[in-house]
Length: 508
Ligand SMILES: Cc1cc2nc3c(=O)[nH]c(=O)nc-3n(C[C@H](O)[C@H](O)[C@H](O)COP(=O)(O)OP(=O)(O)OC[C@H]3O[C@@H](n4cnc5c(N)ncnc54)[C@H](O)[C@@H]3O)c2cc1C
Image (cartoon, rainbow, N blue to C red):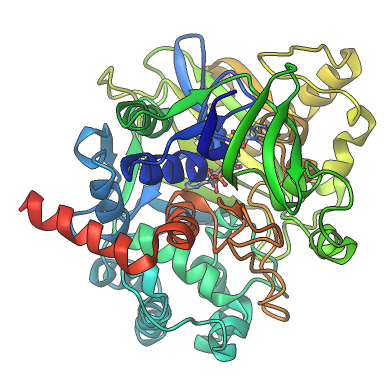
């Protein structure tokens, strides 16, 4: 049987990036993906000829010299991506039901301060301080800035500052506090727990520059896959890992649900840490290690509504909307069922079929797994379709109508411009991505116990590493940083950073 140098479990962004880095370095790589489509949360699907993103709706930090641009340049994909820059003076718009004013986030810090201060003329200093703090926090994460440096793990002030409290300390103006935290759907913010550094790392990249992926985010996965194959790596779709088998203290092979077995020297798991530990042969790691991951809370899941618009009816906008029913953006993850939905993010579909009108829109809101618990023992994906029942179809219909009612309040007339709609629930996210209870972003980061909620790339099994959104932080940028953290365990961080710099110099 062929033996690979590195077997990667899962072809989410983290898995593909690690495969790319290591394959380029000459390692013999095999990526095992359970789904029919690679990419994890980068997967797209088509309905009524409209391409919808399942997970990633927009990216930050892709401007010249910015962090994600530099990382993507290293992978040689930056100049191949089909991107559309979002509205410079308002890429994200925060709105509230009881307030007709739209609060825009503009691109570039000076512009951000200028545009938001126009809505809060008495608060310019607070907005400035907020921007300074974001930038100073981001400067303390070396790899985020493609540098090697001191670990921030011992910096308790940095890790324990609470996002809600910090923002409240800047201004007494509650509306401004809510506006500054108004895109917290991007990290499923929890008032009492979310650290400010998570807010800063995510929001900073979008303030630098915000981009939509034209025709969907799967282009990132496809470009990375092309590279991996060019370097001799293999990606096997519909290859679900069922168990990781050991020889002594090390993993020697991945056993698949299709009956095959793949041998390897090193293993990197892009699956959720708990999902990964459940794949290990029994008794190979201490129970306390498993219990540690079992005890960590995962972020809430989501309900997505994908709207197909009637032709030439809804004007296309290069901006997203983050809307809230109440003037309290920090309390929405823990909603009561009878008040759902308390908020949503609305993201228009960007298409290369240039047009002034939108083809479709993805509307995202939180949904707790409990709401779909009665269908928890069903599983349905494209490769293994299963009809969960009429009651499930009714559930999705009722929820969709409630969400459309909310949209109609903000965008009057939208209902009559909908040609068709499609949905995904926490069950879809669970079945496609294999995160516990369909969690959107994985393990909840907690300012009260920051180190407990940080996952190192090294595991208690010598030849098994983690990668992906559970390591440092989630999102395309966070996962990219995590892939470098994981690969640095194998190649060394300075070596990798030198490679990035060498490619930058070559490119000049
Ligand atoms: C609704 C939603 C909206 C989002 N919007 C944005 C956004 O606008 N911008 C942004 O930057 N980020 C966004 N994110 C976050 C971002 O999509 C994720 O953080 C990121 O894509 C996660 O990548 P990952 O590498 O951790 O892998 P994942 O995407 O989690 O993929 C894991 C992969 O592992 C595979 N796998 C699991 N178990 C097995 C097994 N046993 N055998 C084989 N394969 C297995 C899965 O099938 C999957 O392909 C969003 C996420 C969600 C859910």
